[in-house]
Image 1: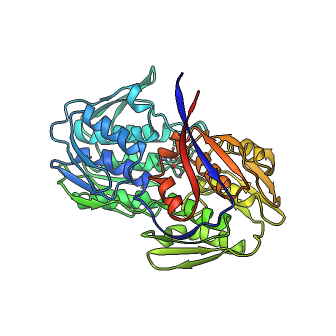
Image 2: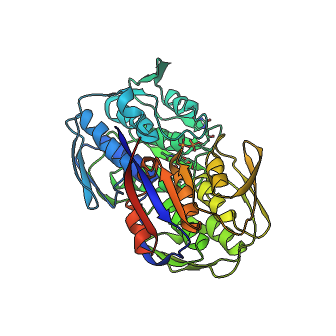
Image 3: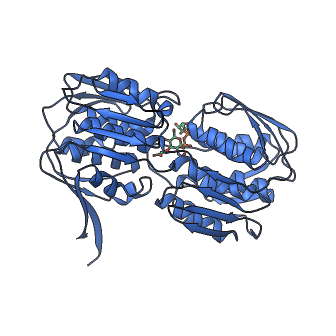
Length: 424
Ligand code: EPU
């Protein structure tokens, strides 16, 4: 009989103590493909040891790159032996960020043949803006049978005016434009911290990218980029998930090695709810003793409230005083955690696919629940930690895609959480 895994949590214990945040997932999955643009080996430090990183190592090796990966220490990529520009379906569908191989391979080979990406099912997630950007740089793009075939004789810089601030589109076009002839201007660019991190990484390889973190990015293409040694930024969403878990369990947790300025929209909401948040420069302390007030949360592009924290935030809001309103403006179907939270006693009414009204209940109780996507997994972890009794979380593999050693980290804060194998 086939076996699968589940996480088992005995909830109701306040999280207390100190924890270190890992390197950023969404920064790492952009930096690793970016190494292909270099003419010499690159070393990246502080990468999280997560499934998405392992999947990218596999893709880079299949393209011919030599990758030495010592999880928790560093990754060294030598892109010089790359001899393929094809990323087939079986590899691309393992993660969303496989689409960054398009921009990176275009920059390296002038050609990319990459299957449509996988990733969490949280909405339609088209990539028309990426392709529009590549076309603006002079590429011929053919999109058929699940493969995107992109060819550029010579990439030539241009103005790319995005129809919406897209994280993936901004990163992908930035990758290709770093090697284009002349200047590229990205208008209505996304401003997330990992976009700034990628620009810093590319600049450390000799690229010239200005304005990352604002909505206009200027890239002067360079024919050659050199190797670098670079440390990826801390994970904004892991930091936020740990902050939310601390608050939700009425605990007292200090999250170390994070960047508090990346957390301002969450910090503001927690303060509004009556939770104490202290900025320690490169750490954040979250303490909660009393009851929590209800709030309104609307997801927005950075620096607004991140969509990636909407789901764990819903769990925190299940036991507030009064009714909270949560609106998801980025993705069409990012409320698949709601049915699972209801199993645990949460009172949540959906007013459309995009708006949840959460009326606080005195407490959640443990129940068997199933993860449907990465941040739904984070929501169920938080709910399991809050709940009275035992919560079984099925399909924990989604959580492993984005959170490094999460059980160990939570156990170090006093959580009773373990992983078990179980029969199908
Ligand atoms: N969009 C389009 N066309 C495009 C690109 C985007 O219509 O060509 C739409 C999307 O459908 C969505 C919105 O624009 O409605 C924003 O999408 P964006 O491109 O910004 O998101 P993404 O690149 O698909 C990245 C992260 C997500 C994170 C979002 C928003 C990676 C690998 N993924 O996705 O991370 O939620 O930005 O911040 O960086 C996660 O970590 O759990 C996760 C889903």
